[in-house]
Amino acid sequence: MASGFFTDTTLCIGCKACEVACKQWNELPADGFAFTGDSYDNTGALGGTTWRHVAFIESTPDAAGAPPTMNRWVMMSDVCKHCTNAGCMEACPTGAIIRNEFEDVFIQPDVCNGCGYCVPSCPFGVVDLIDHQVIKPRFASDGRTNDNALQSHGGVAGKCTLCYDRQKVGLVPACAKACPTDSIQFGDVDELKARARKRVETLQARGVDASLYGVDEKTSVGDLNAFFLLTGPPAAYNLPERPVLPSTRQPAGYASAALAVAGLAMIGLAIFRRESA
Image (cartoon, rainbow, N blue to C red; front, side, top):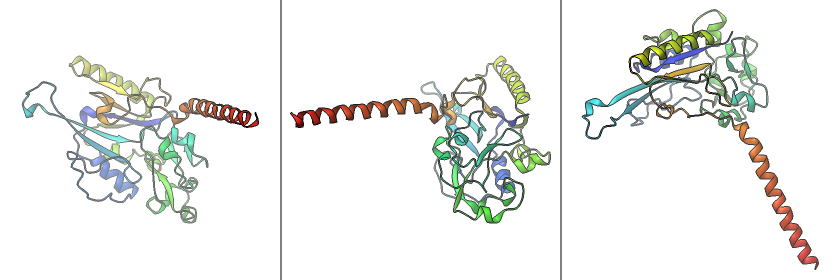
């Protein structure tokens, strides 16, 4: 049974309780207090020490000359998508990134060598490298405290673990537990999808332009185990319209390289024949 998140952005009030709960439970450090000037969002983005990020999007009215009161707030709590076909797992050379018993994409910090290949391989820009000391030892792959393994190198990849340690004892992830409006819902992915589709139907019946992101989209990434209900285009939420695994570009890259090599060989052969004449 795969577990995951259904995030309903129409219920998000931007309280950032999920961010705080994630930081507190996972003992992640603060990211500083720099003023970004980007609405009320000073977290900025997901990162190695920010595993939940509530985005504040201020959208302006479409009609020219509309009063400022018609501006619209859009808020979304973003997180690792725990993709069906995970680019980070595909790129990992050490087997540090696995799919655990809950079908979540999980980084084993005691196996990660900090190479960083997973960082550009994530279509959503979720994974980042962090100092190993911010990862709690209880996240070692064998469940034991393993300080020596964590200190054997300078850094590891970090992202949402879907509160693996809480799931192990039957608890809901900290962010979902702290959400006061049930914008973040946790459970069996198939059950969440059924619930999400009903919610979309309800909103559409009310005239709301609602849709699901990460469900039945037929992309190379596959369905997301952390998916979203949106009321606008994905780009408005800083999400790619159609996420693509980097590996899908390899055939074209190999073909281009082969053509380049063939072209250089032909040029070299022509030069050799001219010099020999």
